[in-house]
Length: 340
Image 1 (cartoon, rainbow, N blue to C red):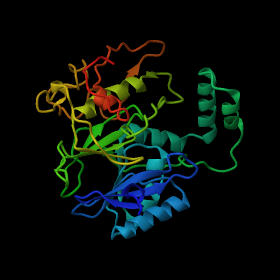
Image 2: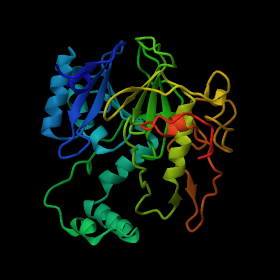
Image 3: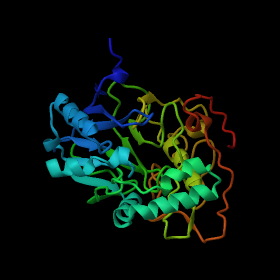
Image 4: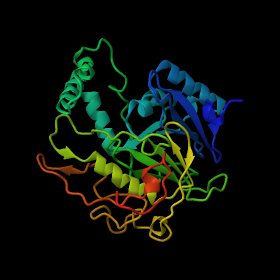
């Protein structure tokens, strides 16, 4: 009997299903594309890699769900990477669906579409060389590519995802949570509805690549090749972990591997009912929120902007108290409120 984790279509209840869309020649194997029912038609969370097999799998999966690509109402993208945003353009062409993305990642998409591929190869070569990568790893980047690579001409979104706001999905409560680190405009999506099996917690979280059950997401280098401004993606990622820790969802629906229930918070300060404005296991970071903002979203800088420091300077950060139950999903360590 096939495990529910390996079925091409899985019904998560409450009008949410997932499709396992393959990623060719990649150890991750697949992207979980979520189909969310709304009063105006199905909406996709991510779309998968731009590849014929991936497209066929997406189309067949939607048919198995009782719908089709042509009936898709909208596409919500967690981040701009090609295994998430790759098929968005084809879905829009087939259905007329809108595409929504955070403004910071839309800026990356716009830059990618405008720059010649050679510009990105030379940029990555210089970065890897400076970091001390072996020459055999860098050499393929110096070789001219005979064909276009996936992700170098991504679809330009036509809607912005605004952090902290509910998305315009008729009949659903889906709130955008800005979680930069993996990419500058990565978002998680908090479905603020009772879990269909009544698991304890606050709704469900579509986590994209921010939280995964058995592996640690890589931290993205999201500088602009033509901009010398220093960014701090690792610091952004740690801040984002604190942000989602306050949500305490009943279940996490990631973009890879499989869904998983969240570990129960052990520290009293982790509970959103006891300290709604505090990050897990510690006080709020300075300059990370504004008066009157939602405790579920970070809007310390304008939507679409990035945390920046002038070239040649470093960004001072205090040690972050990260709840271990949220910072180590695979280990499931108990929360001790220790500084990490």
